[in-house]
Length: 269
Ligand SMILES: C[S@@+](CC[C@H](N)C(=O)[O-])C[C@H]1O[C@@H](n2cnc3c(N)ncnc32)[C@H](O)[C@@H]1O
Image (cartoon, rainbow, N blue to C red; front, side):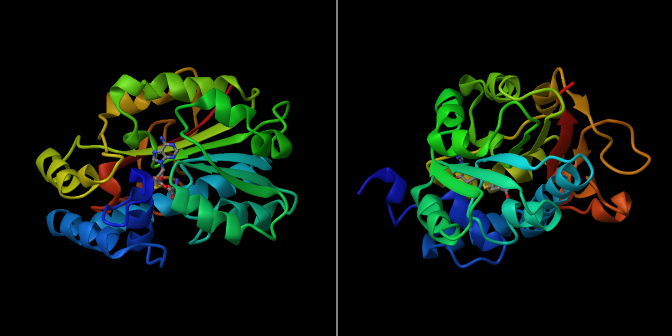
């Protein structure tokens, strides 16, 4: 039994799946989420706001900007209307490559995608960008001469500052051509710092992938050299709280769960 499959440890993917009402989670995933919710009752709203952001960003990339190939890094379990389902509604020829570090995600994802041509999942640590970009699954489905949708949604917080997640984002962005897009979200403790940090200690700190919250300044650095897309109609091109991105009513959408996540979509010039 290695650490990555230990049944007595909670895992980020299973905890997130439980928050979204899925069934691919263990008793310890569920108990750990319940501990976090005691400290941060709006956590479930935050998870749904993040999932909504992913879906709205992918729909905009596929529908409005014509992107039909996506690299979903730290993809999570392919349940709850996943990237390829959103893409296919708009681009039946769409291709999606899912990458995750968690073997349970890969096992389940492989079964779910067995009959899907144009979608693949494989196990990798996204910190090894060169391996991810050179993997046969990636090369088979993604044409790096055409714009790509890069998704780093709710994953950079699992990377420590020492891992230099900013350089990592840059390495993925460097690999795709002009006209590609990056969608990125990450939790912050800019507001309610003590409560957010207590919740992280009660939960994600017990997983093999403890989380790091980032400030607006730290989050914004992920977007260096890219053109941020205005997050909603009438907005300036800025980082938004996650519920606001693509929302019809950004004031209404900016609930308590939304306010501890930053989100942005940006174009490579
Ligand atoms: C909170 S889920 C996000 C899922 C999806 N991106 C979304 O936003 O709906 C985070 C996922 O990132 C994965 N993950 C964490 N660190 C990773 C790493 N270094 N390489 C690849 N995947 C990682 C976890 O296993 C988990 O499935």
